[in-house]
Image (cartoon, rainbow, N blue to C red):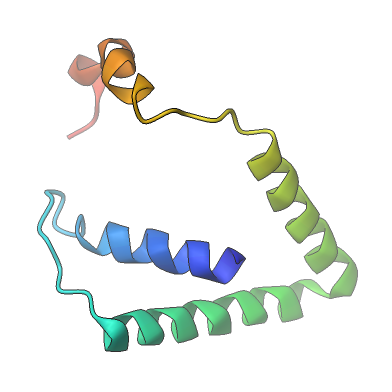
Length: 90
């Protein structure tokens, strides 16, 4: 599931590579290629980390996800007033 989530995030970020949102064509072939690249990356990180560190890394990520507050889709419109657009880097 981690690799699938990372693949989805990568696909979304591809739309922002220019700094502005530009839709990117995403199809099955692109998705499979991104998934395979992500799987290779994760396997490399875990192999280089070693068994104990790789386990700790995965546990830490799981803890972060479990402890992240849930955001309701309805709340994001209400919370827009809390975003500091004036101090956002360009």
